[in-house]
Image (cartoon, rainbow, N blue to C red; front, top):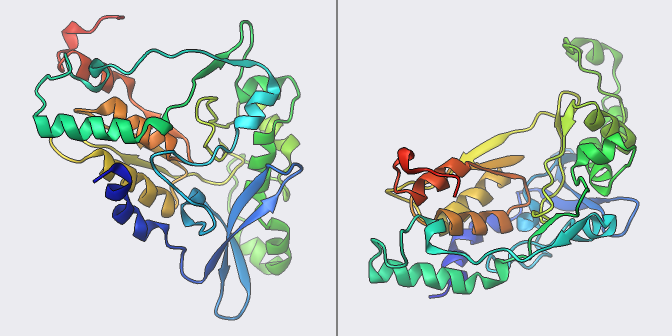
Length: 307
């Protein structure tokens, strides 16, 4: 059984569209900028548009193969800026997955399974990129230079959704007074513009987690003047779980609204697990490098070195 056969039954349920809802997109200023939203049909015949974090998994029109990863959303934007360059990353070693050598403590069956996953996932490998000499490739750097990036426009469209329609639909002065609450210093305009996103990032009041080596990510913003974001924690352990189950956890997390996911995996195959998760995630992924470092030294913190 290859990796796709193993993943297919796990992902079949989580690929089903939500009941009474349709995946649509808001078009941006360029052909490759389309922001997904979920239109929900109410029983009275009206439609409500919701912020959608599920990525292409709930889009029946997208063919997903977990061995290849998700479609590249930001690759062209990154290349157009001309401030990054590809470089040759080092080869994947057994040590990266916590083994002192290739056969360290693995049964023949375990070794065969991991090697099969690596072979089946060869298409998950991307040529890594880095900033050119003297360049800075963060969204904050662009914002402080006054540049509105496609990522910032994407965030603006995503934060707005169909806000203008909703504002008109809910226009009621008494209701507005009732739900006004205390903004606690926040200042959210009626319409989020790309320029507003740029200014918030430039002032350090918002971030757009958009690593150049995660082009599959659908840009989002975290900040006091933006929608509340939800973080989900997933992770295997030294005693249970598998790479397949970690990908399934990721898909379930974003299906139910996680805006970003922390991969807290420990134990064996930590590097390979992260490859599968990052390449198949439309949301930012956080990891804990010290966990992998500890795996490399058998969990003995005193043996850690800079190498």
